[in-house]
Amino acid sequence: MDASFVPKSGKATYGLDRFYNGKASRAERGLELSMIAVVDVEQAIGYSLSVQQTPALEPDSKRATERTRVDDYLDHLRATRAALPAAVRYLVGDGFYSKLKWVKGVVALALEVIGKLRCDANLRYLYDGAQKPRGAHRKYDGKVDLTDLSRWQSLGKVENDTSLYSAVVWSVSLKRKIRVVYLVNRKHPERLCYALLFSTDIELDPIQLYRADRARFQIEFIFRDAKQFTGLTDCQARDAQKLDFHFNASLTALNMAKWEQYQQRNIEQPFVFSMASYKRRKLNQHLLERFIHNLDLDETLIKKHPNYHSLCDYGLLVP
Image 1 (tube, one colour):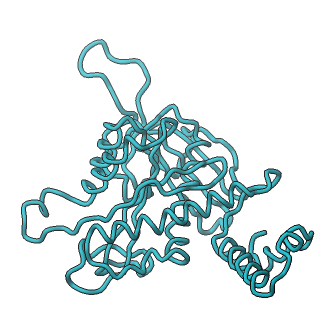
Image 2 (cartoon, rainbow, N blue to C red):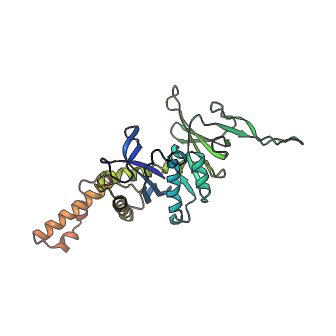
């Protein structure tokens, strides 16, 4: 799940408010789309399942003080929960969603959360030693210090110069046990790069957790392709229903293009989707059809020619 900023001018458009724009790294006036996508981790391909606008906050109202945008995202998830495939168990989001209200809401829907923690997250080791016969049982065994990984399970390297460590700890902010994966990139020893991933499923394999978080970026590609090729940001309507139709039509067109290209893939090679190549192939096919009909050529003879498909693929970025 993720959200994306859509620029929009005017004053009467539904949902117009100030939202965070990652491109500008600041809040700007416009619209925001919240998307739930289904991602195949093994194939590294994602399809949008549900998209809706984030409503504007009502200024100077009780709703603005008691309700946050996390509540809007949870409402979106609740409305879409029944449409999720039965095989879906995990909901992956970026660091923004690593909040107590979000985690509690997702877990209440019988889903597990995978997300990203701050590098200074308040974590504690769990105590598993002998307990005293009297008094409250001891729960914790000290604060997690990421400079000392002696109590973490080392799982080797997942990429060049990137090591993976894992542990089950207590999250103070999320108020629950979580499985944490600590990634350390030692490509530049003088400046280490690291990230903290987590899951509410403490039995989840750490490698699977890492792969699921990587697959989350497929939703970024969905937003990118929809903005560049299927007109996601080109709607001039102001009505909520018309905007909703436009956004869903844009993403549905992208889903159909991706599925068609996936059906025509070479099963012996990894699947790589390129919307630019898809549009170029369709344009080439359209031009060839125009040539055939306008010049009264033999359509069957041309389409059976061994070089016909090479003409359709002319100029493709990804064959």
